[in-house]
Image (cartoon, rainbow, N blue to C red; front, top):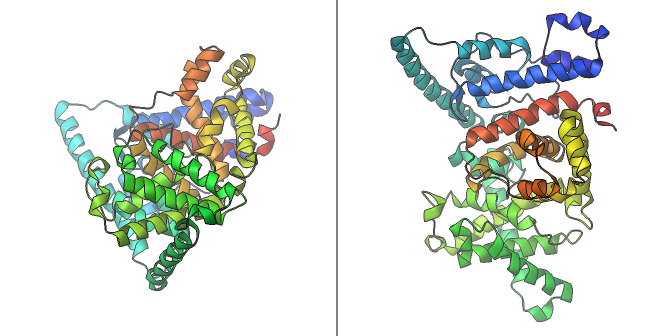
Length: 457
C-alpha cells in the first residue's frame, strides 16, 4: 500500500514518514489527493467537458495501478487539458502526483485584467470545442477500423460516449456485436431472429402451456412494468410496457437459475432508451411508440435482450436465490467506508444502521433509482467500459456516492439516516456531480484495490 500511496501523492517529506504514525500519514496523503482532485474539478467551466487551463506536461502513468484490465483510465476527460486529451485519449492517464496540485493552483490564479480575462474566456471556448472535436474524432477513428480494438474503446468510453454513438459503442463493449466490421451486420441479424424465435416459443403461448411458476412470474413482471421509471412518461406508454414485458419474461425463462427478480426491470431501461434513439429523434419526452414499425420495435427489443444478457452474465449471483453477490458487495462497501471515513462508519454503527437497509437497492438496480434518469446513460458508459471488473468497481462508486453526504450523515440519528438515504437529494444533479462521484471512485479504487489488507477488519 505504501508504494501505491507514494505514487498518488509524491511528497518531499516522504523520507520522514517512517517516523510517523502510518495511519495518520496515509490519511494525510489521501486528504491531499482528494483536495487535488476537487481543485481540478473546481476548475471546470463546462461540467463534464474540459478543464479551464491546459497541463504543461503529460501525466506520468508509469506508477498507477488502477486499471484492472491493463488499459489506462482517467478521472474524466475534464482532468486533462485539450492538448493532453487529444494526445493521450488512448492511454487515458490518471491524475497523479504534484502536477495535479500545480495545475489546480494555476487554475485558481486571478486574471490580470478584464481584457485578458475576456481573451482567456474566448480561448477556453475554442479549447472546449477543439477538445470535443478531438474526442469525437477518436471515437470515429476507432469505430471505423476494420476491427475495433476494445481496450482503446473502453478507455474512451469510460469518460462518456457521444449520445449518437452509444448504440454502436454499447453493443461492442458488451460483446453483442463483434469487433470485426465485416461480421457485424450478419451477427446482429442472426441474433435478432433468434430473439424472435424465443419470443414465439416462450411468450406468445397461452397460459395453459405455462407452469404455475411461469404464470406467477409473468404476473409479477406485468405488475412491475408500470412501476418502471414512473417519472418518465415514455415508459408509461402501453406498447413500451409490452416490449419491456416480452424482454423480461423471455430473459427469465432462458435463465432459470435466477428467473425474474425485481430490479432487473430497471436494468433494461437504459438499453431501451439508447437503442430507440437510433429510430426516434428529439427528447424522450416527445417520443411515441406509434412512430415505430413492428420490425424496428422487434430489433430494439432483441438488442435490449441480448445486451441485458451480456451485462448479467458477469453478475449472475446477484439475482440467484438470496442474491449472495449483492450481499457480498454490501459487505465490501461497509469495509471500504470504514477505511475511508471511519467517523461516519462509526456513527452509522452506533445508531444501528445496517448497510443492507439502503445499499441493497443501490446494487440491485445499479443506482438507476438514485440519480436523475437523464444521467443514467452517462453512468452506464463507465459501467460498460469496466467490463468484467464492473461488480468490483461498483463498490467504489457506491462508497463515493454515499460519502458525498458524509457531513450530513454524521448529524443524523437512525430514523433520519434511513429516510435520508432512501430519498437522497439528487433531483437537481447535473453532469458535474456525477463526474465527481466517478472521480472519487476511481481514486479510491487506485488506492485500495491492489491492497485488500487495508480493507480487512
